[in-house]
Length: 426
Image 1 (spheres, rainbow, N blue to C red):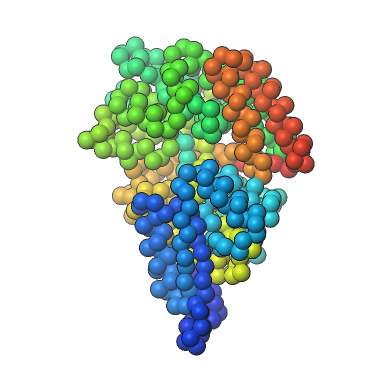
Image 2 (image 1 turned 180 degrees about the vertical axis):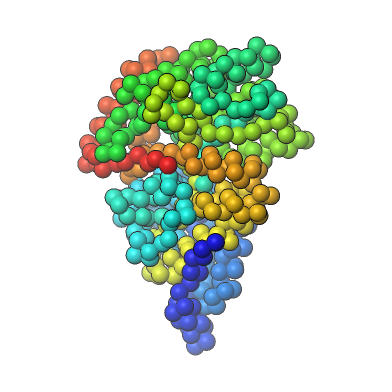
């Protein structure tokens, strides 16, 4: 496995010299999730970084674990041009926003070797041709399926619908459950259906195409799934945990959810489907030439504060934390999917992930990034409103997407971003 330099030798020498002369050590601040296993492993790895390079002191600054609260805190810090935290953990959809605002450093100056990272993760962290964050770990939407109800997962939406109907006829209450509440989770579910029908939210030139015939078909399929009882109407108020409980209790044939659920489903003490489920990417429409199986991309990235007083030292920490050895350890301790493709062949990963590494890599290779835009939060908010209105019968799918497209075009025009946003592909 290729190794990233943990710390330039010159910086290590400077750090040792400062301590030997009685000066203050070089100090960095790291900010991100520090709860539970995730917090324990980041502290352990930072301690190793400090031990390997005497004179370097890293302060771990805790932030709220809720994404919205952390985002708000970061905006307050960075908008005030605070020089710390030096290194920040970002959600995958924040990178272009922070890059366009000038809050984080472009990283091409450090010549990061990126060939080993999944393509969708590179796309999501690139703004106007420059890389602004390094993928740390990957989160992807997955279709969970019941091995006791079918021999293999469906490759098409038609096959999924047929199996779901048969399962309901056999006494399973729900065919498919997904996150249908009006929040970001609904957008990720739509993104996976959208790709399956060959549609997109924005095209390669940043033009709004979410009102295309392919997109309308995708939303019609979602609405039909609810109307036919394949997806329960109750799911239109559900987020991840309500969905997990339904599947974990044996009440659904299929579930769309994130990787975190797999470890919980394997626990025979609490799960009715322990040992009886598999995972795959969301299927595609058989009659859509451009349709493909897809998994919405999530996960964490590491970026450097544009006002950091020690950007080279901050880069050294980013390089250390995203090196193969640290990613393997994170997988073993926290069960998080590495963002490096080569690690899925490593023997240590087989015992670390809650699903077979080969299955995980296949799903990540189907990852689709949400639109890479500085105003993604606004775009998503507009889309959420109209998706939910369509699913609840307040608007037809065509009308909903026409109105969503109009709202998104207005947001982009108001922001001066016509044609500047892009949508990532795997």
